[in-house]
Length: 377
Image 1 (cartoon, rainbow, N blue to C red):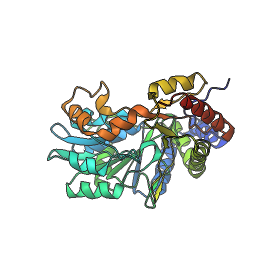
Image 2 (cartoon, rainbow, N blue to C red; image 1 turned 90 degrees about the vertical axis):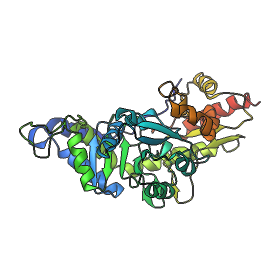
Image 3 (cartoon, rainbow, N blue to C red; image 1 turned 180 degrees about the horizontal axis):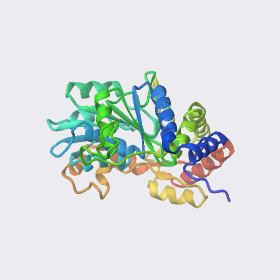
């Protein structure tokens, strides 16, 4: 039987040609040709002044925190529901991670919870465009400005998403993307950092290249810093993908539309939400079970696997996982973040890869419907 994997990229001859060219030609004086093209095109796509290709989204958050001077004694607010990569860089710089609750519909950080989590030690907030959706960025930025808090927008999963006619990646003091192999736009591994602040960008350029000042040809490093660079082959792949981004986003939205149509008669489930004046790119099609189902997400995933259907768990609350569960902030979060703890145990991500056809989605939905019919409480 066919195995239905959670994700899968869309690779065409364009990507193969660009990467082949990079492998063949991008050495010595041409080493950065694809970096420059990719960064320029990505900045234009998101409406930002500066863009920097990196080996990961995580490295972008790390560099942003370092450049903003966040360190020991400071607090960084992150949403309770996200991948650990959104939060881990706060630990890298010695800051304390504070976990805010999510909005019931968007599953992104709640503006109200963000406001409640602010202290006189809060230096940054990292809103996450979860699963391709967007939080209330105008409210979040207004709160952040009032309290002089830097906004690092984690748009890892949201290439092509929009909020009030602005694209994901255009909202933060610094914004970051991921190009992991599972993402809508991929370079296998990789990321992009964006900002409009020339001074901040210049500082990040030094930090990402072992503390070398611009133009340094003598290897006379000014400080101990980091090695965060993308290869030319990755940049070539990313450029080819970016030139197809509208096609990729349309396909993602089509996949969600198929799921929505085939699951419309299944009772007591919730799929990804798209608010007015928001464009959700549905990186992962997600289903949240209502209380009438006597089944956990782990049990549902196991049952679907018996039909050769892979799935992923809705992210666990960060304050519940071993990496953070013993911290003081995690204890407070477990008492405070009611929405995250209510939704997470009942959510899974369904297969969302570019390989999917409507017939495949129909098969997956039929298997899901049948499984759920036997799980009503």
